[in-house]
Image (cartoon, rainbow, N blue to C red; front, side, top):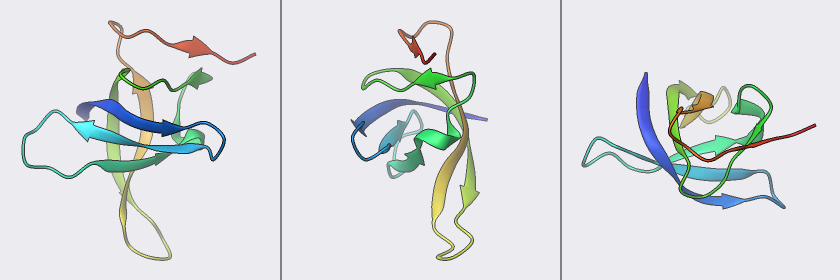
Length: 77
């Protein structure tokens, strides 16, 4: 499990990018469908995530994204 911070989020398009805490790693794409617990991502939110690969393009993206306890989050209803 990796950790990072939501660097950019485009709510109207349903995706964004996570900046991993490990230095030297590129930002990681995520889709809102990867968010767990009905959370709505916000820029600056600290998250835990796993890396998966896109089946069509073999590109890395974040899966199983969940907010860390110390982060401000919103819950969708």
